[in-house]
Length: 142
Image 1 (cartoon, rainbow, N blue to C red):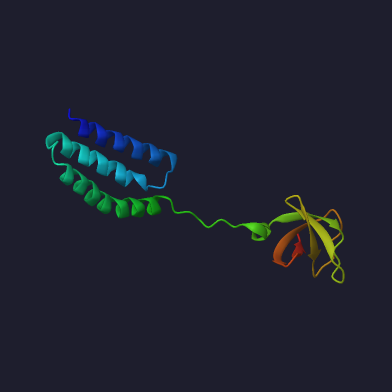
Image 2: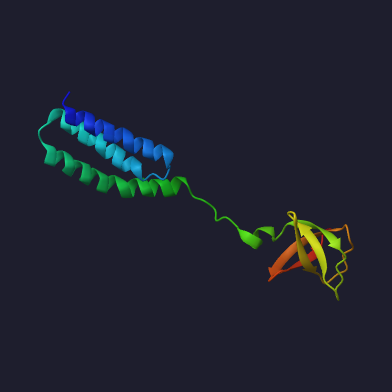
Protein backbone atom coordinates (compact mmCIF):
# COMPACT_ATOMS: atom_id res chain seq x y z
CA UNK A 1 0.00 0.00 0.00
CA UNK A 2 1.48 3.40 -0.98
CA UNK A 3 2.52 5.81 1.78
CA UNK A 4 -0.01 8.41 0.65
CA UNK A 5 -2.82 5.99 1.52
CA UNK A 6 -1.47 5.73 5.07
CA UNK A 7 -1.37 9.52 5.28
CA UNK A 8 -5.03 9.76 4.21
CA UNK A 9 -6.00 7.01 6.67
CA UNK A 10 -4.14 8.82 9.47
CA UNK A 11 -5.97 12.02 8.50
CA UNK A 12 -9.24 10.08 8.62
CA UNK A 13 -8.46 8.81 12.13
CA UNK A 14 -7.36 12.24 13.41
CA UNK A 15 -10.59 13.88 12.21
CA UNK A 16 -12.60 10.98 13.62
CA UNK A 17 -10.95 11.40 17.02
CA UNK A 18 -11.60 15.15 16.90
CA UNK A 19 -15.26 14.43 16.16
CA UNK A 20 -15.52 12.08 19.12
CA UNK A 21 -13.88 14.65 21.41
CA UNK A 22 -16.05 17.52 20.14
CA UNK A 23 -19.40 16.04 19.09
CA UNK A 24 -20.41 18.93 16.87
CA UNK A 25 -20.67 17.04 13.58
CA UNK A 26 -18.02 19.42 12.22
CA UNK A 27 -15.13 17.00 11.77
CA UNK A 28 -17.12 14.02 10.51
CA UNK A 29 -17.31 15.52 7.02
CA UNK A 30 -13.56 16.03 6.91
CA UNK A 31 -13.05 12.52 8.25
CA UNK A 32 -15.20 10.95 5.54
CA UNK A 33 -13.53 13.14 2.90
CA UNK A 34 -10.12 11.87 3.99
CA UNK A 35 -11.40 8.30 3.73
CA UNK A 36 -12.71 8.89 0.19
CA UNK A 37 -9.39 10.49 -0.78
CA UNK A 38 -7.53 7.54 0.74
CA UNK A 39 -9.55 5.07 -1.34
CA UNK A 40 -8.85 7.16 -4.44
CA UNK A 41 -5.13 7.28 -3.50
CA UNK A 42 -5.05 3.49 -3.27
CA UNK A 43 -6.01 3.18 -6.93
CA UNK A 44 -4.21 6.31 -8.19
CA UNK A 45 -1.27 6.91 -5.81
CA UNK A 46 0.50 9.49 -8.01
CA UNK A 47 -2.49 11.82 -8.45
CA UNK A 48 -1.86 14.14 -5.49
CA UNK A 49 -3.75 17.10 -6.95
CA UNK A 50 -6.80 14.94 -7.63
CA UNK A 51 -6.69 13.56 -4.09
CA UNK A 52 -6.61 17.05 -2.59
CA UNK A 53 -9.32 18.19 -4.98
CA UNK A 54 -11.52 15.24 -4.02
CA UNK A 55 -10.92 15.99 -0.35
CA UNK A 56 -11.97 19.63 -0.82
CA UNK A 57 -15.03 18.85 -2.96
CA UNK A 58 -16.31 16.04 -0.73
CA UNK A 59 -15.72 18.21 2.36
CA UNK A 60 -17.63 21.08 0.76
CA UNK A 61 -20.54 18.74 0.07
CA UNK A 62 -20.54 16.92 3.41
CA UNK A 63 -19.98 19.89 5.72
CA UNK A 64 -23.41 21.51 5.19
CA UNK A 65 -25.13 18.11 5.11
CA UNK A 66 -23.63 16.94 8.39
CA UNK A 67 -24.37 20.29 10.07
CA UNK A 68 -27.98 20.05 8.91
CA UNK A 69 -28.24 16.49 10.25
CA UNK A 70 -26.68 17.53 13.55
CA UNK A 71 -29.21 20.32 14.01
CA UNK A 72 -32.09 17.97 13.24
CA UNK A 73 -30.95 15.34 15.74
CA UNK A 74 -29.90 17.72 18.50
CA UNK A 75 -32.83 20.06 18.79
CA UNK A 76 -32.29 21.69 22.14
CA UNK A 77 -34.85 23.55 24.11
CA UNK A 78 -33.60 26.92 25.28
CA UNK A 79 -32.15 26.78 28.76
CA UNK A 80 -33.77 29.11 31.25
CA UNK A 81 -30.98 30.79 33.14
CA UNK A 82 -30.37 33.28 35.89
CA UNK A 83 -33.33 34.53 37.89
CA UNK A 84 -35.90 33.43 35.31
CA UNK A 85 -35.22 29.86 36.39
CA UNK A 86 -37.06 30.36 39.71
CA UNK A 87 -40.32 31.63 38.21
CA UNK A 88 -42.94 29.01 39.00
CA UNK A 89 -40.85 27.46 41.77
CA UNK A 90 -42.11 27.05 45.30
CA UNK A 91 -40.23 28.63 48.18
CA UNK A 92 -40.50 28.79 51.94
CA UNK A 93 -41.53 32.09 53.51
CA UNK A 94 -38.99 32.97 56.21
CA UNK A 95 -40.41 36.40 57.09
CA UNK A 96 -44.16 37.04 56.96
CA UNK A 97 -45.34 38.68 53.75
CA UNK A 98 -48.10 41.24 54.24
CA UNK A 99 -49.90 43.09 51.41
CA UNK A 100 -48.61 46.34 52.94
CA UNK A 101 -45.12 45.13 53.85
CA UNK A 102 -42.54 43.00 52.05
CA UNK A 103 -41.30 39.80 53.59
CA UNK A 104 -38.67 37.24 52.66
CA UNK A 105 -38.77 33.90 50.89
CA UNK A 106 -36.11 31.25 50.45
CA UNK A 107 -35.96 29.62 47.01
CA UNK A 108 -33.19 27.26 45.85
CA UNK A 109 -31.10 28.24 48.85
CA UNK A 110 -31.34 31.97 48.11
CA UNK A 111 -33.25 34.54 50.15
CA UNK A 112 -35.36 37.04 48.20
CA UNK A 113 -37.39 40.11 49.11
CA UNK A 114 -40.99 39.05 48.50
CA UNK A 115 -44.30 40.86 48.07
CA UNK A 116 -47.81 39.52 47.72
CA UNK A 117 -51.40 40.73 47.50
CA UNK A 118 -52.33 38.36 50.33
CA UNK A 119 -51.02 37.61 53.78
CA UNK A 120 -48.57 34.70 53.80
CA UNK A 121 -47.31 33.63 57.21
CA UNK A 122 -43.80 32.54 58.07
CA UNK A 123 -43.11 28.82 57.32
CA UNK A 124 -45.82 28.68 54.64
CA UNK A 125 -45.00 27.88 51.05
CA UNK A 126 -45.46 30.32 48.19
CA UNK A 127 -45.08 30.17 44.41
CA UNK A 128 -42.93 32.70 42.52
CA UNK A 129 -45.04 34.54 39.92
CA UNK A 130 -42.57 37.09 38.57
CA UNK A 131 -39.39 38.95 39.39
CA UNK A 132 -38.83 42.66 39.10
CA UNK A 133 -35.37 43.81 40.10
CA UNK A 134 -34.53 42.05 43.34
CA UNK A 135 -38.12 41.53 44.42
CA UNK A 136 -40.13 38.40 43.78
CA UNK A 137 -43.91 38.51 43.52
CA UNK A 138 -45.53 35.48 45.09
CA UNK A 139 -48.84 33.87 45.87
CA UNK A 140 -49.70 31.40 48.59
CA UNK A 141 -49.29 27.81 47.49
CA UNK A 142 -52.57 25.99 47.80
